[in-house]
Image (cartoon, rainbow, N blue to C red; front, side, top):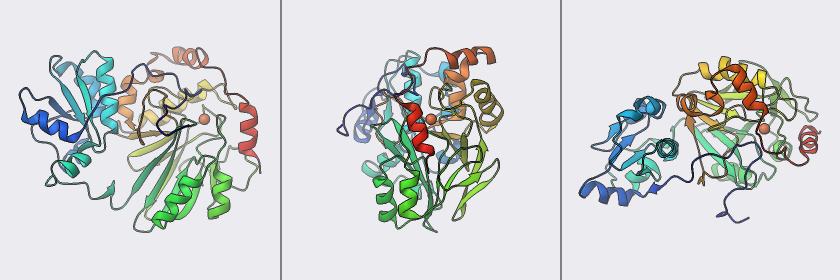
Length: 361
Ligand SMILES: [Fe+2]
């Protein structure tokens, strides 16, 4: 499959309702802002990020407050949403399009790209994506619809890979290019839809494989329990046990971000009818664990939908998912349990064989 082909529909992901989100390039936005009837610019970032820099004449409406604030937006004016890199703005644009706004776009590349190509005087984020003390890389696999992650402390040059795919070349390249040492390989859960890459990556890096203490894994691994920390340099991933999609599912929390595996996807959550899942446990994990975290917490899932046409990253916030996510808006526990047991795509082919392979020594 060429890199330009749309990803195939994924068996874990219900097809999203919206199509691709229109993007606007920084130079085009600059022209529109200088012209007649400029669009309404909306910054969807939380306040701490906005304080670094923002575009003049804009309005501030953080993504997690968008649902409450949508009624205050003008229906007859073009709207351009922006954030740091463009991904939360896409999520916001998708929501507005779903709610009948006719002229909505997200700023491609976010304020970072705008500062680079249009306004070099605009204050930039320091260092890498999150400042100089933390790097988060989203590593998509279009052929499987999966998202793996690399998180690293750029000072100590130590990082962790989360949910590596079978082809470990992208992780090897990232580690080699950045001269990174790998402190660990974390599996959020036993995958049933694709072959995992933990053993291959372990063989070449010698980094330990870290999984839930509930995992029936037969390969050499270290077991993680609730509240435990996976340290890399000055940073740490904190373990939250979130069974439901599978009984061995973990969510990893890193400061104000959570890597949710298939417990919480963008717009939905992972199905529970494969590999020992339980809709009741998933309900408890969502309600009692994840949704109690601050609403500005950023959500990094393990899958993405087939119609998002995403470039290389995709992210939401807990507040936005709480307000818009189909699975989280069923109205009652009973309705959620029904939602989780009806209407899903056919089970992935040979999923039981994939599970067995992913657990093998
Ligand atoms: Fe999964």
